[in-house]
Amino acid sequence: MNKQGLIDAVASVASLKKSRAEGAVDAVLDCISRELKKGSDVRLVGFGTFRVAQRAATEGRNPRTGETIKIAARRVPRFRAGKDLKEAVA
Image (cartoon, rainbow, N blue to C red; front, side, top):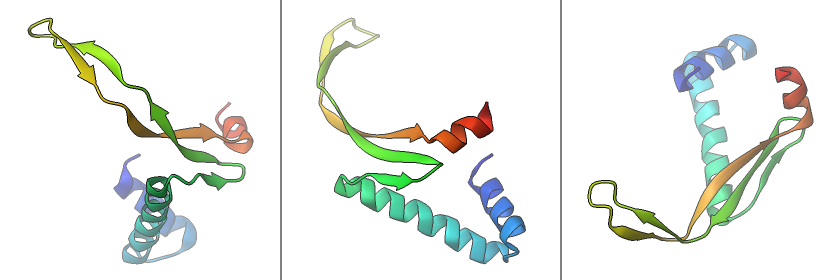
């Protein structure tokens, strides 16, 4: 399912017009993104937790030249599924 499929599903389940469902989906995704950008966790009980993890600096190789390069440390988003989601998928 892509974003448009999600919007269609939300519109159908919530009996909303697609434009309103799109606004709702965009608002949820925007709120999650803003909280992660601030470094906060987003916990949706039963569904899962979005959090920011720190990835350490490492050394890699340029595949064309074989030259060693430095890969900078950075923050990356992570998601951990909640109990209800795990049970629904199993």
